[in-house]
Length: 472
Image (cartoon, rainbow, N blue to C red):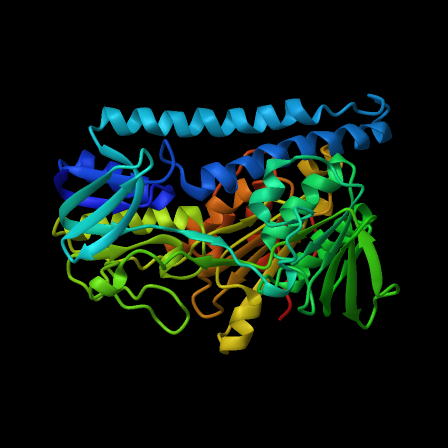
């Protein structure tokens, strides 16, 4: 069986389905290929969406506990793990099912199966029903995403050692959980399990959790996490895992580890993700893989093969769904003959812990390392009326400003709802706004969004809600 199509998209994650849908909207014949029944990819099935559903529940549990300080006691929560899992799965089903409907409405030819390149104009699809189909295309977009990275030494054949996919299945709530890796995925899942009742220990081999984020912002998050987790060990390695009758025996190696041999009910290994490039038949094309294992592309997302484009996690960091979607749209427009390039000034990143941590543009750490001249304006949420009404003053809004032009080149926010607030900062960077533009933009009161305006006011030494004259 053979199918001809103008555009073949391999992988139906946020990048793949965004590209396929836009191409269909622009009048192209599109074939979208993925192993799942409906579009969605890792993000919707095993990543962003299920984790955020569980983090919402974690937030509710935390707020119910904190309500005791306000004179409201809901009592000890009764957690029905089966019903919680059903809620999470329902969210995934609703969104992926909706994407399936959108695919049909756009007349996208959706094939459930695994695709590999026969050459630069044809794919062989091994369908999930056991049959095969050839897809002959004019152009193709490769959007196969990534999978959790594994550590061979931790592969001991035990179901008590999980990756992020297994952790999201939420089979049970272990009494003691070790999380190997202090990146955003590890910390988000740590937050979920700690809220559900697990005693969580996080081990990170780098000097601090969330490597790459500014330390002053991480410090705000770390203070709260330390009050909720059993331990956070940095500069520490896991040197051995061994299954025993009592659980997983773990040997730790680090300066501040008080007990180097500990036993946990389960271990979550979250040490990053790696691009999916094997088994795709890329050797039958002119597509090149760079020294870091990512597919090489130019500014239009075109690979070294003129017929094939690539987007998302397989082309490099940051491995974020919204970055993949933006790249997918650029690739489609390039295929349509438009003069475009993927050249964002800022790609926002969000860690959905409690508090949330978000940033866009140049971080203070990056500016310092690259020798970029900058000034910083920080507004602590202790002076925010809205944060005080929420009893959540543990936050901060930070602007990174170019001194000569006063242009905003970076924004960082840590606090409740930081993930929603960062969009304004991203827009400010993309529009080339300066601190005065933010200062003169009237923000609603009382809101957390005001802290953007307040930070700009602080830069000029005339903040209404904080006395801090500008240094001469």
